[in-house]
Length: 124
Image (cartoon, rainbow, N blue to C red):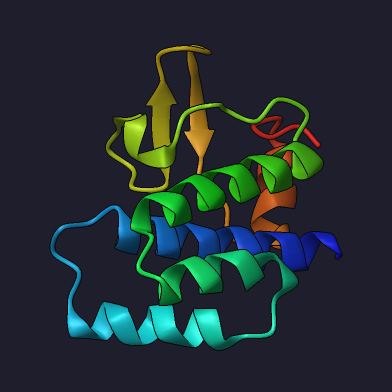
């Protein structure tokens, strides 16, 4: 899997985490989730199985694990906290981590990543 594919997968994982961690998921969100889970992505095989069996707690664990593994492949020192655990800033794509005392940047593709890397905001 190349870097761009890993970023796409991380983006889908974030959507799934938002959906399964939310109490106010709506029908439109459900359509997006169903589209993601019907894609032929090897990493989602177990998640699909758990989804069909309505094992939401297992899905949340699997998503966190998958996200951690991909982040470790992409970044030297990925933040251990979930995006939702970070402190909000004025910019929706930047949050602050109280553990590592750094800003964390939300990147969704390789070009954004390279932009942040050139600014020394992300480490590959």
